[in-house]
Image (cartoon, rainbow, N blue to C red; front, top):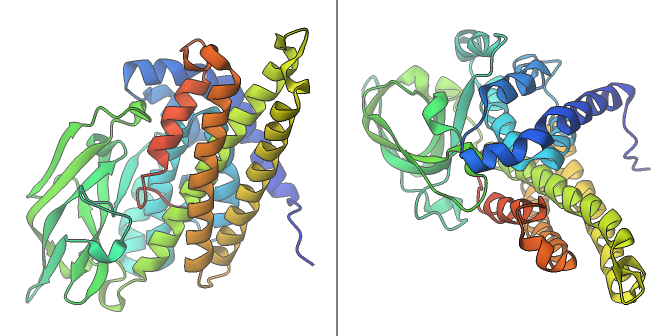
Amino acid sequence: MISFELTQEQKLAQSMVQELASSQLRPAARSADDREAMPSSILDEIWATGIIQSQSDADGYSPTLNALLLEELAVADASFAIAAAAPIGFLGAIAAQGSSAQKKNLLPIFAGDKYRCAGVAIMEPDFAFDVSAIRSTAIKKRDGYLLSGMKGLIPLAGSCSHFLVVARCGDTLDAFIVERNARGVSVGEKKPNIGLRALEMATVSFKDVELPASARLGESAGCDVQRIIDSARTALSAIMTGTARAVMEFVMPYTKERVVHGDALAKKQTIAFRLADMRIETDAMRWMTWKAASILEQGGDATRQAQLAYTYCTENAMWIADEGVQMLGGHGYLRDNPVEMWYRDTRTVSVLEGAVGV
């Protein structure tokens, strides 16, 4: 029998993040979007929950719990959720697939009490949702690698201390740990996106970056790049579920209070059916995401489920965001309401494949 009942530990973690999301993150979201910058105080509040640092602990790493908590963060704001998911993806990859030396050298760096960012770099400027089309290359040398390429839409790129770069090495894909201050690494100006504006996303260029053999994730054993991709798709699915839930939870009370032609808008049959569909699709998005996360947690092949969850969440989160704007009528386009921001954020999240992880 399949059960989605949360454990006591998961419920406590969910409650803690819900409190942070409602009291700190949601009130700060609009200001961060307007300023196109992430407040350091908010990042430190997210860090204080411990969900990011837990990735470096074998007992704390849990893709299922991560998916649950990323959804709660995204209910408040997708940008803040991705700011958490980016280092989670990096640390999760090191913890799951790094060599003993890589774990020993890198994981303690992220054990402090202040937010520290690292990026998972898969996407490229001409990326078309086809991982096999990655053009970045890592040429094997006698004592290391020569990395060249360009990666796009890296969250908080200017603040990252490390990047996990997926590149083609011969006939296969591999991942490499690259320090921000390595020679040949260049972070571009932040991109003026329509959504997730607070994330200060930018393109990162790697021009003939000389890397030691120890920079290869897993060193001589290598790594499973597909697992990193599956993790990213699952994380984005959780975040899109959160933004869809935010829209749904906002428009439901609004349509019950909004009177049109003498009756509440929610009593109109076409609106009532759409609200029901919002609830159905949001729950379906969550179950598909949790299934992918569960397979990852058990060490199984999550490629099919992660892709299904990602595709389903992309389509339905965008539909829910669009319906939310429509149900508010002209008010849906006003910045007085958060729905227009959630609409913009949802559109941007749907094209961020490979930028985060669970």
